[in-house]
Structure formats: C-alpha cells, structure tokens
Image (tube, rainbow, N blue to C red; front, top):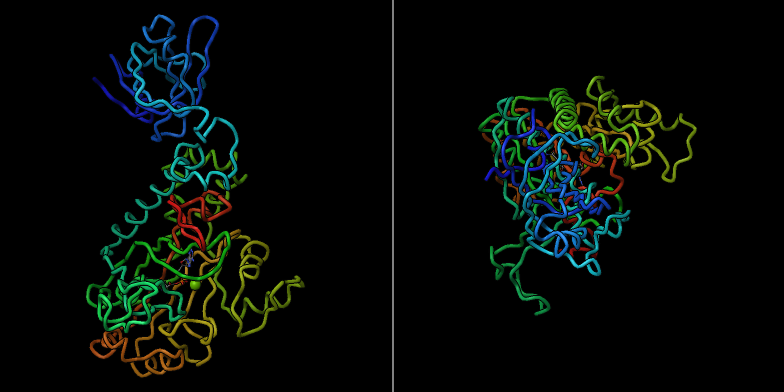
Length: 459
Ligand code: 4AD
Ligand code: MG
C-alpha cells in the first residue's frame, strides 16, 4: 500500500504509478447522472482538495458512497490519473473506499457554505477543517520554521526560558498569578504557596534570555507569554507567542538591523513556502497582501525617532481620538498613521521618553529618552518592541526605584551588571501579529488555534 498525503499527490512530478491510498475528510460530494460520485476530500496537507472519482460499480456505492456528506472521513484506494476537468492536475479513480467515520449532517457545524469567523470561533475544535484555518495553520508552521532557520543560520542558540516566574519583566503589573493555595479560602500568606513566594506566568522571557546572552553571546527564545491586560481588541491576546533574540556586544542600531533582516526573512519564507495559501489570502482575505509582503522584503525600513514621530503627527492635520504630545505613548491610531499614511511601509521608531518605557531600557545621554525601538507595520501597528539594555548598575538601580520596583527582587538581573557587564540588546516579536499582517486576517483570535482573551477560554 502506497499511502500519500494530498500535497504529495498534487505536487508529484508525474502521476504516481500503481495503487495509492489517500485519507481525508469529505468537503463536497456530487453525484452524476452517469453513475459516478465525485468526492472532494482534504487532509490538511494542501490547500487544494483531491477529487476522488467513484464508479457506481463499487460494492458500497449506493449503500455508503452515495450517502457521504461533508465531514465524513474516508480512506480511498485507487490509481492517480491526470484530471480532465477538476481544476487539479491529478485525481483518483477509486477502486475501494472505506468510510472511517460518518458525520451526521444534522449536527455537523462545518457545512460547505460561508461561515463567519465569529461562528467558527465557537467551533474552534473543528475550524481547522476549513480553507481559511488550514491556510493559517500552514502559514504559522512555515513562519515558525523560518524563525528557527533565521537564528540558527546566524549562530544564535535557542534557549528555553521559564514559563513560571517570580519577576515582572515589563514592570506593568499584568501578570497571571500561579498558585496552589485554596481559592476563596481566606488570604493565606504567599510563603505557604507551592514555591514559597508569589509566582506568575511570564510576560516575557527577556530577563532570563539576557542572562544567557551575557555568557553565550547570541541567544533567542520562542515560546508562549501571558498578559492579563483587559484589552478586548483585534490585536491583543492573553496568551500569545513571542520570539525574543538577545545579543551581547550589541547596541540599538545593531538591534534594529537584526529586526529588519528578521521581518524580511519571515515574509520572504512565507511567500516561497506557502504560495498557494498566500494566493488564497490575497484573493479572499486581503487584496494585495502578497504585493505588500514582496514590497516589504525588497525595500529598506524607515527609521525615525519618537521625537520626529511626534512632530510628524502634530503637523499631520489629522484628527486623532487621543491627542499627541511629547511624553505620551503612541496609540495604535498614531502608529498606523505613521506607517500607513505618512511612510507607506514599515518604520522603526526609536528613542522613546523614559517615563513611558520599561526600566531595563538604556538611558540615553539626553537623560530624557531611552534606547528603545518599536517596529511598526501598516494595518497592525507594533509587531516588535525592543531596546538596548541598561548595562550600568547605578543607572539600572535608579530606574528600578523610579518604576517602584524592588531592586533586591532583581538581584540576579543586577548581577549581570555587577560582574563583567557588556552592552547588549534584543527585542520581542509577537508571532500572532506577524501572522495577522502576513495573511491579512483581521482578528488576532483567528491566527492562533485556541485564543485566550478576557472571558474566553472554552477549549
Ligand atoms: O513590546 P513588548 O511588551 O516587549 C517585551 O515584552 C520585551 N520584553 C521584548 C524584548 O525586548 N525581549 O512585546 C513584544 C511584542 C509586541 O511588539 C507585540 O507584537 C507582542 O509582543 N505583544 C502582543 N501580542 C498579542 N497580544 C498581546 N497582548 C501582546 N502584547 C505584546
Ligand atoms: Mg511594546
């Protein structure tokens, strides 16, 4: 038995000889008057379905095959032949079809018709069987591979930073508590808790990545991060994946160069690795998304300082919901104006005011700004946030105090500055926002298999 995936069949240089077996879930069935069933199946390996042609002479034709409906699972055996009319190069002339699982049409939610994304979120366990979610999953996979490929080929070590942590990297107080203390049982002290102290799900692997970079040079993390921010937007998740490279002996300019090369590498890998899925997104989800990605890969990112960005926004004559003034954070509408309207391609904004950025960012000589950078892209706004890190112990300690953090809780982080300190820098790329941008999907909930958002964790 020569079992193949649909991708292997459709991409074969010539029709495979002999008998081939293919398994899949039925998308559509058409019965012809001439005594044939045309059964389109998909197994997730490819965007395109495989057409199975079943003759009425098959022993289970009227008892089973003529009763197949969307969602049934089958295993078909037969010969692969050039297809006269299905729009594919190949189809299967079936000699035997086994039904593995029926799918009652009265109950099966993924009928072959248009479904809204909102509806499919309520069927997240079955939505991988749709065109859109299959394509998103394949793009997400290709992107993950490209991420590892990029760093591995540049000598970065993949390090696994902890998910449970006692420190708030961003100092923003958006952490989920991790506890084994009884719920609702009164306030037991944290010393009684599993770890003997308050612990949380990490918001970022950065601090631990810094410790490894200050020993191994170039490292990166790639894992889930968690934020209990109550933002019900199309760009926020409570659980999302972040890629965080960290480099010793590197400053902000080197960090921005890496970010630009990284984003270009990811988009170019998706264009070459998933052409069929990208053609679908271009046709059905966001017109022009392929050309946009090609343009990004081919042109340099703009670089401006926060101060310049504020000047541009003030002079823009645009009416914003949030006022613009030096010292306040850029809102998503401001980010989008800069990258979509003013510049028309990705822009790296650097040197933000110290009071709106995290304590670990290196203080610039002007004492007003820090060596921070955000990479902004059209439609989404920020996909990367990064910085050169404060390597001077006295300045770091002062910045912690300024942010209301207890320096003694970060003693191990401060040790990096106490013993053999070096300039170092890194950034975090939000995987889901990057997939959103590359596919044109409007809502971040539709680019991760099981989105976690306020009041939603069903599956
Ligand atoms: O800008 P952020 O908060 O940076 C950090 O966490 C740094 N410690 C990273 C570093 O320097 N190593 O987050 C980085 C990126 C954002 O640019 C955004 O793409 C994504 O993570 N992100 C989110 N994505 C989805 N949902 C959320 N709630 C997100 N918060 C941040
Ligand atoms: Mg940020």
